[in-house]
Structures are given as C-alpha cells and as structure tokens.
Length: 559
Ligand code: NAD
Image 1 (cartoon, protein in one colour):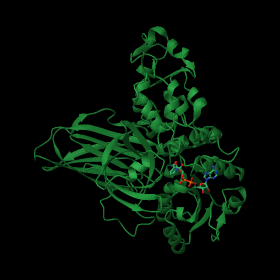
Image 2 (cartoon, helix red, strand yellow):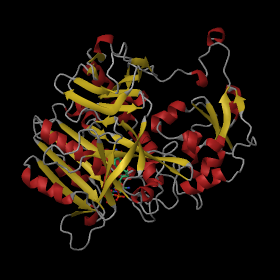
Image 3 (spheres, rainbow, N blue to C red):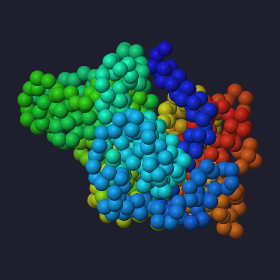
Image 4 (cartoon, rainbow, N blue to C red):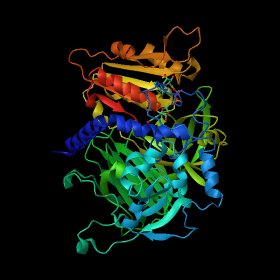
C-alpha cells in the first residue's frame, strides 16, 4: 500500500468511525469535554462558557427539541469571565490550600464524584469540582473524565485548549511515577507516556526527505515530499532567532524539520514550491558570508513524520494589518506573519487565535479564507506572508469584542494550522454540495475557489447558504457574481428570520429543501460538505444520511 492509499484508508476508517459515532461526535461538538469549536461560539473559549453567549434568543441557545444535545443552560454567574474571576479570587479550588502532591493511580480513581472530581491530563492532576458548573458541555460530559487519565479524551475533542492556563488554580499535582513497568508488568504511568509520536508510520521510503546546500551567501533546504502539492501549498515555516521550524502539511500527515541553525541568518525566508513534483525549497540568507560545516543542531521532533493531529501546536506573533467590514457584524482581518514566518494554509484548515483575558489564555479557531472569493490574480502580498480571517463579532463574547477593538498594528498570537480536510475526498467528485450556515461558510469559501480552479472533473458545485437575515449573508455580492460568471456554480440562500420583502427561501434546513438540492445524476460522484452551528450540523448530517449518502460522501467541518 503506498502512502496515498494508506492515508486514504486512514481517512476512510476515520470517516467510518466518525459516521458510526456521528451523534456522539456531534454531542461532543455541542457540549465538548472541556468545550470545543461549537462551544467556543457558545463560550468564545475552549472550555468555558459565556452566560450571555450566544445572545439570548439565539438559535444556538434555543435549539428545537430533539435536534440539539446542548444540555447546558448555564446558571447565572457562570460565564467565562466569571470563571476567570473565580480563579483569581484566591479561593482554594483544589482543597489542598495551595499544596501540590504526588497522586497515585489508586488515589486518582477515588476522586470520581461531582463534588470531588479529579482528572489527569498529560501527567498533571486537576480538581475539576469547582469548574463543574462552568463547563459548557455540562457536568455529565466533564464526569467522563472523573478519576481517570483523560488525556486521550481531551485530545480527541480539543487538544489545543490551553488547559494549563484555564485550570492552573485547580492543579492538585503530578501523577506519581510507578516503578519500572517491566518489573510490574504494567504500562507506563501517564507522566511517563511518550510524546504522541507513536502513530503508525508509513513505510520508510514514503517519508518525505530533505537535503541542503549552501552558496557563499545562502543556505538552501530542499524538501522532497514525494507527492503532488496542492496549489495552496503545504509549508509552514518559522524562523525565530536561530531556530528554524519547517512543517509540511501533507494530507493527514505532518513532516517536521527543526534546527537550531549553526550560524545567524537574516530574518526572511524565501519559499518556492514545485507543486507537481512535490518539492519545496527554502532559501535563507547568511548574516555573515562564511562556510557552514553543518546546518545546525536538531531540535525536538526533528525529521518526524506523524499524523497532524499528534503534532503539537506552534504559535507565532502576527501583526493586525487591516480590518474590513464584511457585514454589519463580521470583519475580514488581515494578519501579517513575522518576517521569518511563511504559512501556506491548506484549504479548509483553521488557525487558532490566542489572547490573554485577565491573565488567562483564551483561544478560538478560525478558518483561513482568501482576501476575496475569487481574487482577480495573484495578490500583491508575498505568498504565505499574510493570513485572512473572517470574524463575526458577538457583543457578549469574550474574544471577538477584544479582537474587534484591537488597533491596527496590534499583535495577535496565531497557532496552527490544523484541520481534517484532505483533498483526497475531492478525488473524482463530479458534484460538490455545500451546506453552510452563518460563518460556517468560511471553509467553503476556499473550497469553492479550489474546486473551480483545480478540479475540472467537478461538473456542478452548489452552495445552500443558511442565514438569519439578508444582512448576515457573507460575501453575498461576490457569490452572486460568481454565479453569473461560472456555469458550474450555483448558490441558494435560505433565511431563518427574513424580512417580509425577502422573496427567496425561508426557514431552517429540512428534508424537502435537500431532496431537490442534492441531486444524484447517473455516473456522478457526490460529496456533501457541512459546516455551521452545532444544531444545524446535526440536522444536516441526519438529513443527508436519510437521503442515502454514504459516509464517504459526507464531510463535516469541525475543529
Ligand atoms: P447563526 O447563529 O447566525 O445561524 C445561521 C443559520 O444557521 C441560521 O439562520 C439557521 O438557518 C441555522 N441554524 C442555527 N441554529 C440551528 C439549529 N439549531 N438547527 C438548525 N439550523 C440552525 O450562525 P453563526 O453565529 O454565524 O454561527 C456559525 C457557526 O459555525 C459557529 O458555531 C461556528 O463555530 C461554526 N463554524 C465552524 C467551523 C468549523 O468547524 N470548521 C468554521 C466556521 C464556523
């Protein structure tokens, strides 16, 4: 099996697993173990809800019976800010009066009730009891972690959550290191668990490889990815001081090169990609023209090829270059990467914005978009030096009002990219259907462009776009323009709170709407992509499956 097949098989089994547990996944999306993307909108934070968010009357808050599993209506006084305040109040949240202890596995197991709930994440033990009422997914979800090592559970839902910051006042201590597992016949304790580099690696010769060479003034690194690279690119390069980190995002796999360079270079990296042969070449300029005897010293996880989901998140400080209004409450942010960074965000992937609110890190994922739906030609900015994010500002949120108020020139910490879409799902697709609600349009934006420009096999691509009011439709005029220009593309707008004058479709997603929309002509291969609020996603997935679309024909965007 070659790597492509292997990755594809990996994808298939994952989508089978996803589909078979679709409701539990959606339940996670809705509630999350410590919060997740959907909850972020609810909470604007990984794991902590905002009482006033979504706004009262919001469709996310008031989901129809049977559609949403969001069990939680948080009690007043249990917002994200309330949690942050509580953690700063000096109250003893662990019951240990600030003492840190070593916790044995037997001890951990004993703390498994709501009033006394300990869990272990990456070898550190936290008392979650005080957090119970603040968790957007509710107690029940949190109790899944009670008395056990919940690292895998946590990683499954949202490994990017900065729990160290969120739960620092809940820290009980560290898991005790057991005697040698060899002697005990037991597995290693969580604190000794190896870094998650254990994902089965594809056969050796499918691994990307690299080479380097130098001239008097330059150092050049060439990465042979051994597969075709999509036009959006796959390289994420960060040169910080003398440390050079190069990550290649290859479908579901990540190839990392990481060095402390032998000598100083200028803080600018040039990245050239030969897409069809899968070669990426980096050019660094030496600060001093001298011969290097070696490239540098290898740093952590250098030359590893593992699944993206197992790679740690890397953050860099970006500068806010501009903010442009897209609708009455949504802005397009343009962020400039530091001079030594280049980021080619694969289509459908998201990045994380991190900022500090009263000393606690708040993180939220955003799908990268282009400057426009179909940019006229290559934009003037250097490829990979800027990122565009479409951000809806929720007045009662914690992160978005902060972002909306940032002055031009302010800095923002950007992590990632991450995401599950691999272009393999588009292979041989003739009919691409997109069901998007609200900002769930963002992953579709680049998908539309990619499909139009690179997937000539696609005969028809249709977007059904659900919004509350007409003024909420993102890039409406660009979508309409594209419809007139591109025969293959079609958009249908559906409003849930339309004005009387609206002549288009009304209501929320239902079977009748989809029946006609999701046509399946003979000899076609269909793909249905879904993204939006959790309740919407849940309904859409259910309806699409009822129309006999298989798991392979369905892609749900979620963080
Ligand atoms: P919104 O609240 O304005 O709702 C937009 C439309 O979604 C509504 O008009 C309605 O038609 C539909 N809808 C909402 N709740 C529904 C429900 N319970 N059942 C059926 N239909 C429902 O949307 P918004 O505020 O723009 O939120 C967009 C959501 O998309 C956010 O939750 C965001 O986190 C998510 N999102 C996810 C990703 C991703 O996972 N990759 C990317 C972008 C956005």
